[in-house]
Image (cartoon, rainbow, N blue to C red; front, side):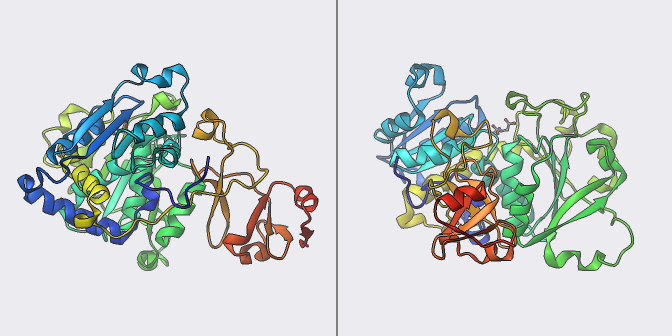
Length: 439
Ligand code: NCD
Protein backbone atom coordinates (compact mmCIF):
# COMPACT_ATOMS: atom_id res chain seq x y z
CA UNK A 1 0.00 0.00 0.00
CA UNK A 2 1.52 3.36 -0.94
CA UNK A 3 1.73 5.80 1.95
CA UNK A 4 0.42 9.26 1.24
CA UNK A 5 2.89 11.99 2.12
CA UNK A 6 0.29 13.63 4.33
CA UNK A 7 -2.68 11.92 5.87
CA UNK A 8 -5.73 13.72 4.60
CA UNK A 9 -8.73 14.45 6.76
CA UNK A 10 -9.22 14.83 10.49
CA UNK A 11 -7.74 11.93 12.42
CA UNK A 12 -6.07 13.17 15.52
CA UNK A 13 -6.37 16.03 17.97
CA UNK A 14 -2.59 16.20 17.78
CA UNK A 15 -3.12 17.93 14.44
CA UNK A 16 -4.88 20.88 16.13
CA UNK A 17 -3.04 24.14 16.64
CA UNK A 18 -4.09 27.46 18.16
CA UNK A 19 -4.71 29.22 14.84
CA UNK A 20 -6.92 26.43 13.53
CA UNK A 21 -8.88 26.05 16.76
CA UNK A 22 -9.50 29.76 17.26
CA UNK A 23 -10.75 30.21 13.71
CA UNK A 24 -12.81 27.01 13.94
CA UNK A 25 -14.59 28.02 17.15
CA UNK A 26 -15.36 31.40 15.69
CA UNK A 27 -16.71 29.76 12.55
CA UNK A 28 -19.08 27.55 14.54
CA UNK A 29 -20.43 30.65 16.23
CA UNK A 30 -21.17 32.22 12.84
CA UNK A 31 -22.92 29.09 11.60
CA UNK A 32 -24.98 28.88 14.75
CA UNK A 33 -26.24 32.41 14.22
CA UNK A 34 -27.35 31.77 10.63
CA UNK A 35 -28.78 28.24 10.59
CA UNK A 36 -30.97 28.59 7.50
CA UNK A 37 -28.47 30.22 5.17
CA UNK A 38 -26.50 27.00 4.77
CA UNK A 39 -29.37 24.68 3.90
CA UNK A 40 -27.97 24.02 0.44
CA UNK A 41 -24.25 24.41 1.09
CA UNK A 42 -23.53 20.71 0.44
CA UNK A 43 -26.36 19.94 -1.96
CA UNK A 44 -25.16 17.19 -4.32
CA UNK A 45 -22.52 15.83 -1.90
CA UNK A 46 -22.77 12.42 -0.27
CA UNK A 47 -21.44 11.71 3.19
CA UNK A 48 -20.95 8.14 4.43
CA UNK A 49 -21.01 7.26 8.12
CA UNK A 50 -19.41 3.92 8.99
CA UNK A 51 -19.70 3.01 12.65
CA UNK A 52 -18.03 -0.23 13.68
CA UNK A 53 -18.68 0.51 17.36
CA UNK A 54 -21.88 1.60 19.09
CA UNK A 55 -22.79 5.27 18.90
CA UNK A 56 -25.79 7.50 19.48
CA UNK A 57 -24.59 11.10 19.70
CA UNK A 58 -21.66 10.98 17.33
CA UNK A 59 -23.30 9.24 14.37
CA UNK A 60 -26.64 10.99 14.64
CA UNK A 61 -25.10 14.41 15.11
CA UNK A 62 -22.86 13.90 12.07
CA UNK A 63 -25.88 12.79 10.06
CA UNK A 64 -27.98 15.66 11.35
CA UNK A 65 -25.19 18.07 10.35
CA UNK A 66 -25.04 16.56 6.86
CA UNK A 67 -28.81 16.86 6.39
CA UNK A 68 -28.81 20.44 7.65
CA UNK A 69 -26.32 21.29 4.90
CA UNK A 70 -28.34 19.54 2.22
CA UNK A 71 -25.95 16.56 1.75
CA UNK A 72 -27.12 13.01 1.15
CA UNK A 73 -26.17 10.41 3.78
CA UNK A 74 -25.36 6.71 3.39
CA UNK A 75 -24.55 4.67 6.45
CA UNK A 76 -23.24 1.47 7.98
CA UNK A 77 -24.56 1.70 11.50
CA UNK A 78 -24.08 -1.95 12.35
CA UNK A 79 -20.89 -3.61 11.12
CA UNK A 80 -22.63 -7.01 11.23
CA UNK A 81 -24.54 -5.95 8.13
CA UNK A 82 -21.40 -5.06 6.10
CA UNK A 83 -18.84 -7.19 4.26
CA UNK A 84 -16.38 -6.66 7.09
CA UNK A 85 -17.96 -9.76 8.68
CA UNK A 86 -16.94 -11.72 5.57
CA UNK A 87 -13.31 -10.91 6.26
CA UNK A 88 -12.92 -7.88 4.05
CA UNK A 89 -9.96 -5.78 5.11
CA UNK A 90 -10.43 -2.29 6.41
CA UNK A 91 -8.43 -1.01 3.43
CA UNK A 92 -10.68 -2.72 0.89
CA UNK A 93 -13.83 -1.49 2.62
CA UNK A 94 -12.42 2.03 2.71
CA UNK A 95 -11.55 1.95 -0.97
CA UNK A 96 -15.04 0.77 -1.90
CA UNK A 97 -16.92 3.24 0.30
CA UNK A 98 -14.64 6.05 -0.88
CA UNK A 99 -16.05 5.40 -4.36
CA UNK A 100 -19.60 6.02 -3.13
CA UNK A 101 -19.15 9.14 -1.01
CA UNK A 102 -17.37 12.49 -0.97
CA UNK A 103 -16.38 12.20 2.68
CA UNK A 104 -16.45 9.34 5.18
CA UNK A 105 -16.89 9.48 8.94
CA UNK A 106 -15.47 6.26 10.38
CA UNK A 107 -15.58 4.83 13.91
CA UNK A 108 -13.53 1.75 14.63
CA UNK A 109 -12.36 -0.18 17.73
CA UNK A 110 -8.69 -0.26 16.67
CA UNK A 111 -6.17 2.48 17.50
CA UNK A 112 -5.03 4.26 14.34
CA UNK A 113 -7.89 2.99 12.15
CA UNK A 114 -8.79 6.46 10.92
CA UNK A 115 -5.33 7.15 9.50
CA UNK A 116 -5.26 3.79 7.78
CA UNK A 117 -8.73 4.23 6.30
CA UNK A 118 -7.74 7.64 4.95
CA UNK A 119 -4.87 6.14 2.97
CA UNK A 120 -7.18 3.84 1.05
CA UNK A 121 -10.39 5.85 0.80
CA UNK A 122 -9.33 8.50 -1.72
CA UNK A 123 -11.73 10.99 -0.11
CA UNK A 124 -11.41 12.95 3.17
CA UNK A 125 -11.96 10.85 6.27
CA UNK A 126 -13.11 12.16 9.64
CA UNK A 127 -12.33 10.11 12.71
CA UNK A 128 -15.53 9.30 14.60
CA UNK A 129 -13.45 7.67 17.36
CA UNK A 130 -10.70 5.09 16.87
CA UNK A 131 -10.05 2.69 19.74
CA UNK A 132 -8.62 4.48 22.71
CA UNK A 133 -6.60 6.80 20.53
CA UNK A 134 -8.66 9.76 19.56
CA UNK A 135 -12.00 11.44 19.03
CA UNK A 136 -11.07 14.83 17.58
CA UNK A 137 -14.55 16.06 16.70
CA UNK A 138 -15.74 15.33 20.26
CA UNK A 139 -12.90 17.65 21.33
CA UNK A 140 -14.22 20.34 18.98
CA UNK A 141 -17.66 19.93 20.57
CA UNK A 142 -16.17 20.12 24.08
CA UNK A 143 -14.07 23.17 23.25
CA UNK A 144 -16.99 24.93 21.60
CA UNK A 145 -19.15 24.35 24.68
CA UNK A 146 -16.50 26.02 26.85
CA UNK A 147 -15.73 28.74 24.31
CA UNK A 148 -19.35 29.86 24.34
CA UNK A 149 -19.13 30.33 28.09
CA UNK A 150 -15.67 31.79 28.39
CA UNK A 151 -14.72 33.35 25.06
CA UNK A 152 -11.11 32.14 25.63
CA UNK A 153 -9.08 29.52 27.45
CA UNK A 154 -6.05 31.26 28.89
CA UNK A 155 -5.90 31.10 32.67
CA UNK A 156 -8.74 28.53 32.83
CA UNK A 157 -8.22 25.34 34.83
CA UNK A 158 -9.87 22.17 33.55
CA UNK A 159 -9.81 18.80 35.34
CA UNK A 160 -9.85 15.68 33.15
CA UNK A 161 -11.22 12.85 35.24
CA UNK A 162 -11.66 9.08 34.97
CA UNK A 163 -10.21 6.47 32.66
CA UNK A 164 -7.47 8.54 31.05
CA UNK A 165 -5.68 5.41 29.88
CA UNK A 166 -8.43 4.18 27.56
CA UNK A 167 -10.60 7.28 27.23
CA UNK A 168 -10.15 8.78 23.75
CA UNK A 169 -12.26 11.83 24.52
CA UNK A 170 -10.09 12.93 27.45
CA UNK A 171 -6.87 12.26 25.53
CA UNK A 172 -8.01 14.30 22.55
CA UNK A 173 -9.26 17.10 24.78
CA UNK A 174 -5.87 17.30 26.49
CA UNK A 175 -4.36 18.26 23.12
CA UNK A 176 -7.08 20.81 22.40
CA UNK A 177 -6.96 22.54 25.78
CA UNK A 178 -3.19 22.84 25.85
CA UNK A 179 -3.07 24.24 22.33
CA UNK A 180 -5.38 27.03 23.56
CA UNK A 181 -3.46 27.85 26.74
CA UNK A 182 -5.66 26.27 29.45
CA UNK A 183 -4.25 24.50 32.52
CA UNK A 184 -5.07 20.82 32.63
CA UNK A 185 -5.27 18.86 35.89
CA UNK A 186 -5.04 15.10 35.35
CA UNK A 187 -7.43 13.21 37.63
CA UNK A 188 -7.05 9.56 36.59
CA UNK A 189 -8.90 6.72 38.26
CA UNK A 190 -6.38 4.66 40.26
CA UNK A 191 -4.27 2.66 37.77
CA UNK A 192 -5.89 4.28 34.70
CA UNK A 193 -3.55 7.16 33.90
CA UNK A 194 -2.31 7.95 30.41
CA UNK A 195 1.30 7.00 29.54
CA UNK A 196 4.17 9.31 30.44
CA UNK A 197 5.24 9.51 26.80
CA UNK A 198 1.79 10.86 25.83
CA UNK A 199 2.11 13.64 28.38
CA UNK A 200 5.70 14.35 27.37
CA UNK A 201 4.59 14.89 23.79
CA UNK A 202 1.87 17.31 24.84
CA UNK A 203 4.20 19.27 27.13
CA UNK A 204 6.78 19.70 24.41
CA UNK A 205 4.39 20.59 21.62
CA UNK A 206 2.40 23.07 23.74
CA UNK A 207 5.50 24.48 25.46
CA UNK A 208 4.05 23.54 28.82
CA UNK A 209 5.54 22.11 31.96
CA UNK A 210 4.16 19.69 34.52
CA UNK A 211 3.77 20.60 38.18
CA UNK A 212 1.79 19.37 41.16
CA UNK A 213 -1.19 20.88 42.95
CA UNK A 214 -3.03 19.69 46.02
CA UNK A 215 -6.52 19.86 47.47
CA UNK A 216 -8.30 17.56 49.96
CA UNK A 217 -11.22 16.89 47.55
CA UNK A 218 -8.84 15.31 45.04
CA UNK A 219 -8.32 12.35 47.38
CA UNK A 220 -11.93 11.25 46.94
CA UNK A 221 -11.35 11.02 43.17
CA UNK A 222 -7.87 9.69 42.64
CA UNK A 223 -6.86 8.40 46.08
CA UNK A 224 -4.31 11.22 46.49
CA UNK A 225 -4.59 14.87 47.53
CA UNK A 226 -2.00 15.75 44.93
CA UNK A 227 -2.51 15.85 41.19
CA UNK A 228 -0.42 16.69 38.14
CA UNK A 229 -1.10 19.97 36.43
CA UNK A 230 0.05 20.82 32.91
CA UNK A 231 0.46 24.55 32.47
CA UNK A 232 2.04 27.08 30.14
CA UNK A 233 5.69 27.54 31.04
CA UNK A 234 5.41 31.15 32.17
CA UNK A 235 2.61 30.36 34.55
CA UNK A 236 4.51 28.55 37.29
CA UNK A 237 6.78 31.51 37.99
CA UNK A 238 4.62 32.72 40.87
CA UNK A 239 4.75 29.38 42.63
CA UNK A 240 8.36 28.41 41.97
CA UNK A 241 9.69 29.55 45.33
CA UNK A 242 6.67 28.50 47.34
CA UNK A 243 7.29 25.77 49.89
CA UNK A 244 5.45 22.49 49.33
CA UNK A 245 2.79 21.78 46.74
CA UNK A 246 0.61 24.77 45.80
CA UNK A 247 -3.04 24.44 46.77
CA UNK A 248 -5.44 24.20 43.85
CA UNK A 249 -7.80 27.14 44.18
CA UNK A 250 -10.55 26.38 41.73
CA UNK A 251 -11.70 24.39 38.76
CA UNK A 252 -13.31 26.28 35.88
CA UNK A 253 -14.49 23.00 34.36
CA UNK A 254 -14.43 19.32 35.20
CA UNK A 255 -14.58 16.81 32.36
CA UNK A 256 -15.92 13.52 33.65
CA UNK A 257 -15.64 10.28 31.70
CA UNK A 258 -16.86 6.72 32.16
CA UNK A 259 -14.84 3.57 32.66
CA UNK A 260 -14.01 2.16 29.19
CA UNK A 261 -14.67 -1.45 30.14
CA UNK A 262 -15.12 -2.52 26.51
CA UNK A 263 -11.39 -1.76 26.16
CA UNK A 264 -10.47 -4.00 29.08
CA UNK A 265 -10.45 -1.28 31.76
CA UNK A 266 -11.26 -2.30 35.32
CA UNK A 267 -11.86 -0.04 38.30
CA UNK A 268 -9.29 -0.70 41.01
CA UNK A 269 -11.25 -2.36 43.87
CA UNK A 270 -14.38 -0.79 42.44
CA UNK A 271 -13.09 2.77 43.04
CA UNK A 272 -13.87 5.14 40.17
CA UNK A 273 -13.87 8.95 40.38
CA UNK A 274 -17.10 10.85 40.01
CA UNK A 275 -19.13 13.74 41.37
CA UNK A 276 -20.83 13.26 44.71
CA UNK A 277 -23.56 15.45 46.23
CA UNK A 278 -21.34 16.64 49.09
CA UNK A 279 -18.66 17.86 46.70
CA UNK A 280 -21.03 20.25 44.95
CA UNK A 281 -20.80 22.75 47.82
CA UNK A 282 -17.02 22.81 47.94
CA UNK A 283 -15.57 26.25 47.04
CA UNK A 284 -13.19 24.41 44.67
CA UNK A 285 -16.18 23.80 42.38
CA UNK A 286 -18.09 27.04 43.02
CA UNK A 287 -17.83 28.24 39.39
CA UNK A 288 -17.01 24.92 37.77
CA UNK A 289 -18.84 23.76 34.65
CA UNK A 290 -19.50 20.02 34.50
CA UNK A 291 -18.93 18.33 31.15
CA UNK A 292 -19.13 14.71 30.06
CA UNK A 293 -18.99 13.26 26.53
CA UNK A 294 -21.74 10.79 27.55
CA UNK A 295 -22.90 8.08 27.94
CA UNK A 296 -22.53 8.36 31.68
CA UNK A 297 -22.51 5.84 34.44
CA UNK A 298 -22.46 6.35 38.19
CA UNK A 299 -19.69 8.97 37.95
CA UNK A 300 -22.25 11.63 37.10
CA UNK A 301 -25.42 11.14 39.20
CA UNK A 302 -28.74 12.48 37.92
CA UNK A 303 -28.97 14.84 40.88
CA UNK A 304 -26.39 17.04 39.08
CA UNK A 305 -28.67 17.46 36.03
CA UNK A 306 -30.55 20.42 37.49
CA UNK A 307 -27.45 22.09 38.87
CA UNK A 308 -26.78 25.44 37.15
CA UNK A 309 -23.20 24.30 36.46
CA UNK A 310 -24.20 21.23 34.42
CA UNK A 311 -23.35 21.57 30.72
CA UNK A 312 -23.30 18.00 29.39
CA UNK A 313 -26.68 18.06 27.68
CA UNK A 314 -25.85 21.37 26.08
CA UNK A 315 -22.54 19.82 25.01
CA UNK A 316 -24.42 17.01 23.24
CA UNK A 317 -26.70 19.58 21.59
CA UNK A 318 -23.66 21.37 20.19
CA UNK A 319 -22.67 18.23 18.24
CA UNK A 320 -24.47 18.97 14.94
CA UNK A 321 -23.40 22.61 14.50
CA UNK A 322 -19.78 21.77 15.28
CA UNK A 323 -19.87 18.94 12.75
CA UNK A 324 -21.46 21.23 10.17
CA UNK A 325 -18.34 23.37 10.46
CA UNK A 326 -16.14 20.27 10.02
CA UNK A 327 -17.96 19.27 6.82
CA UNK A 328 -17.83 22.78 5.40
CA UNK A 329 -14.10 23.10 6.06
CA UNK A 330 -13.43 19.82 4.28
CA UNK A 331 -15.88 19.92 1.39
CA UNK A 332 -16.30 23.65 0.78
CA UNK A 333 -12.81 24.94 1.44
CA UNK A 334 -13.39 27.46 -1.38
CA UNK A 335 -15.79 29.40 0.83
CA UNK A 336 -15.09 28.06 4.31
CA UNK A 337 -11.38 27.48 4.52
CA UNK A 338 -9.60 27.47 7.89
CA UNK A 339 -5.93 27.75 8.88
CA UNK A 340 -4.25 24.42 8.15
CA UNK A 341 -4.03 21.60 10.65
CA UNK A 342 -0.54 20.55 11.72
CA UNK A 343 -0.14 17.54 9.49
CA UNK A 344 0.96 14.18 10.84
CA UNK A 345 3.50 12.44 8.63
CA UNK A 346 2.47 9.14 7.08
CA UNK A 347 5.57 7.57 8.57
CA UNK A 348 8.46 5.55 7.24
CA UNK A 349 8.03 1.81 6.77
CA UNK A 350 11.79 1.26 6.45
CA UNK A 351 12.98 -0.50 9.63
CA UNK A 352 13.46 -3.85 11.35
CA UNK A 353 11.77 -2.87 14.59
CA UNK A 354 9.18 -5.60 14.42
CA UNK A 355 5.46 -5.32 15.08
CA UNK A 356 3.81 -2.45 16.92
CA UNK A 357 3.91 -3.16 20.70
CA UNK A 358 0.31 -1.99 21.07
CA UNK A 359 -1.87 -5.10 20.73
CA UNK A 360 -4.83 -2.93 19.74
CA UNK A 361 -3.00 -1.16 16.91
CA UNK A 362 -4.77 -1.39 13.56
CA UNK A 363 -1.55 -2.69 11.96
CA UNK A 364 -2.12 -6.11 13.61
CA UNK A 365 -5.61 -6.60 12.19
CA UNK A 366 -4.45 -5.49 8.75
CA UNK A 367 -1.15 -7.41 8.92
CA UNK A 368 1.04 -4.45 7.99
CA UNK A 369 4.35 -3.25 9.33
CA UNK A 370 4.01 -0.13 11.50
CA UNK A 371 5.58 2.89 9.78
CA UNK A 372 7.49 5.10 12.23
CA UNK A 373 7.45 8.83 12.80
CA UNK A 374 9.69 10.73 15.15
CA UNK A 375 8.81 13.46 17.66
CA UNK A 376 10.72 15.32 20.36
CA UNK A 377 13.45 17.92 20.36
CA UNK A 378 15.21 17.13 23.66
CA UNK A 379 14.48 13.45 23.58
CA UNK A 380 13.61 11.59 20.44
CA UNK A 381 10.60 9.30 20.51
CA UNK A 382 9.91 6.93 17.65
CA UNK A 383 6.19 6.33 17.35
CA UNK A 384 3.99 4.03 15.32
CA UNK A 385 2.60 6.42 12.69
CA UNK A 386 -0.85 4.85 13.08
CA UNK A 387 -1.40 4.46 16.82
CA UNK A 388 1.33 6.71 18.32
CA UNK A 389 2.71 3.93 20.53
CA UNK A 390 6.40 4.13 21.28
CA UNK A 391 8.48 1.69 19.23
CA UNK A 392 11.46 -0.02 20.84
CA UNK A 393 14.39 1.98 19.45
CA UNK A 394 17.83 1.93 21.12
CA UNK A 395 20.10 3.30 18.41
CA UNK A 396 19.83 6.07 15.84
CA UNK A 397 21.68 5.92 12.55
CA UNK A 398 22.32 8.83 10.21
CA UNK A 399 21.66 7.88 6.60
CA UNK A 400 23.96 10.56 5.32
CA UNK A 401 27.09 10.00 7.49
CA UNK A 402 26.34 6.24 7.91
CA UNK A 403 27.19 6.50 11.61
CA UNK A 404 25.11 4.94 14.35
CA UNK A 405 24.78 6.37 17.88
CA UNK A 406 23.01 5.46 21.12
CA UNK A 407 19.51 6.95 20.91
CA UNK A 408 19.90 9.09 24.03
CA UNK A 409 23.17 10.71 22.99
CA UNK A 410 23.80 14.29 21.91
CA UNK A 411 25.05 13.00 18.57
CA UNK A 412 21.73 11.25 17.92
CA UNK A 413 19.85 14.47 18.70
CA UNK A 414 21.87 16.27 16.06
CA UNK A 415 20.78 13.95 13.23
CA UNK A 416 18.28 15.66 10.97
CA UNK A 417 14.87 13.96 11.15
CA UNK A 418 14.90 13.17 7.41
CA UNK A 419 18.24 11.32 7.83
CA UNK A 420 17.21 9.19 10.81
CA UNK A 421 17.24 5.41 10.68
CA UNK A 422 16.12 3.69 13.89
CA UNK A 423 17.59 0.41 15.15
CA UNK A 424 16.68 -1.90 17.98
CA UNK A 425 20.09 -3.51 18.11
CA UNK A 426 23.54 -2.23 17.32
CA UNK A 427 24.51 -5.31 15.35
CA UNK A 428 21.65 -4.73 12.96
CA UNK A 429 23.08 -1.31 12.15
CA UNK A 430 26.56 -2.74 11.67
CA UNK A 431 25.19 -5.40 9.35
CA UNK A 432 23.67 -2.65 7.24
CA UNK A 433 27.08 -0.99 6.93
CA UNK A 434 26.70 1.71 9.61
CA UNK A 435 29.79 2.60 11.64
CA UNK A 436 29.53 2.57 15.44
CA UNK A 437 30.06 6.06 16.83
CA UNK A 438 29.14 5.57 20.48
CA UNK A 439 31.38 5.96 23.48
C1 NCD B 1 -17.55 8.74 23.71
C2 NCD B 1 -16.84 7.79 22.79
O1 NCD B 1 -17.44 7.04 22.04
O2 NCD B 1 -15.61 7.81 22.86
N1 NCD B 1 -18.89 8.99 23.37
C3 NCD B 1 -19.17 9.98 22.49
O3 NCD B 1 -18.72 9.97 21.36
N2 NCD B 1 -19.92 10.99 22.93
C4 NCD B 1 -17.35 8.47 25.13
C5 NCD B 1 -17.68 7.11 25.65
O4 NCD B 1 -18.19 6.25 24.98
O5 NCD B 1 -17.39 6.93 26.84
